[in-house]
Image (cartoon, helix red, strand yellow):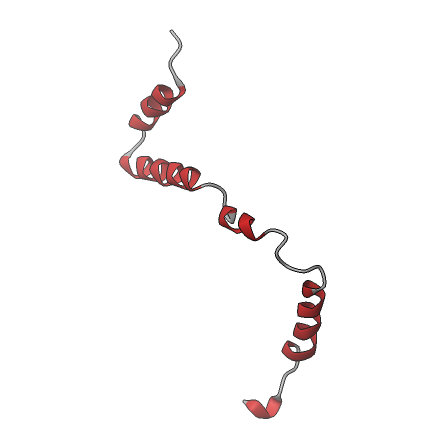
Length: 71
């Protein structure tokens, strides 16, 4: 007899210790939320092509400096 995927998952999870059942539940919840960063897809293409180069130049110019007298 062939079981449905949900039935098979439920049967296997029932056999696990409670701690592992909680891990399985947490994993399923991450699947329901979708991949990490999925909410950022709406911003795809919103940064002008020149902006990343300008950001990198600003970081290189300003963030790489160490002012020993500042400590």
